[in-house]
Image (cartoon, rainbow, N blue to C red; front, side, top):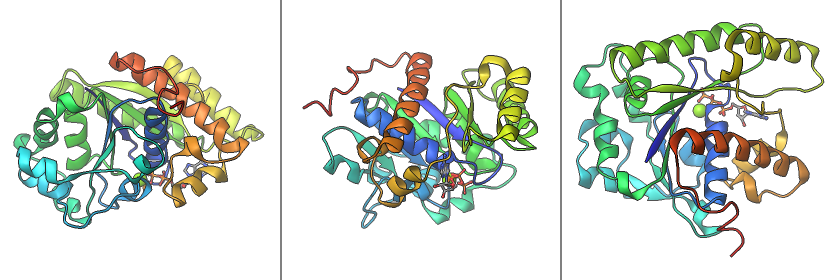
Length: 272
Ligand SMILES: Nc1ncnc2c1ncn2[C@@H]1O[C@H](COP(=O)(O)OP(=O)(O)OP(=O)(O)O)[C@@H](O)[C@H]1O
Ligand SMILES: [Mg+2]
């Protein structure tokens, strides 16, 4: 089981969008996937079309990471009505904010790792949608992760923001979990015609080299439409959605490679 955190220290740059895009690509490919909603805003749970009634959630798991609690906090995504496959969600909750203090204890930081260890035979890939800070929740996510994808927009402060995030990953790798590594930087909301955006991407390539992942993700309303309808991007109609789906397929290739994930043939589930 490979665990990828999707993070940025800044809000609103596309963490949830990238989590959902990668989840959609993994679902299309038949990879058994669990999405952990570690953001108190719980946007990714919404995007994955979940029923929360009668379920526990991430706050319960962080309080008491026992198998019974973990299983009751996981539910199947409504995406599985579109086609069969394993797409589960460890449900988010506004109460998760109570576990996001600035100085978590060592014990607290390992609670997600403890929870995921109980179910590791059941998934090939775990995607963790993080909150936009470096407080306890993000540290908890990183302690449980093999890789971190850093999300950024191609703006004035993007190099500094990505640099800060990479340094934070390095700090956690040294101090807490030697298995943690950056997957790379995903540049989101790119307008290909924008000279400013192309300049910022070049600036990041000069600074971070191959850590700047290909492809960069364009700004497209089809993404918002698929999210709004709580459907996987890969089944959303239109050329724009399919181009984006192909971009996420390429990003997923990197994840699969980094995690040595034994993925079924591409399109295995959709071809049925
Ligand atoms: N490439 C894109 N094209 C169009 N809209 C986008 C794109 N990426 C993100 N958005 C939109 O921008 C908004 C913020 O994106 P998103 O929720 O993914 O960011 P986030 O980093 O998860 O935010 P937060 O820090 O609040 O969790 C959403 O409405 C999303 O639909
Ligand atoms: Mg989000």
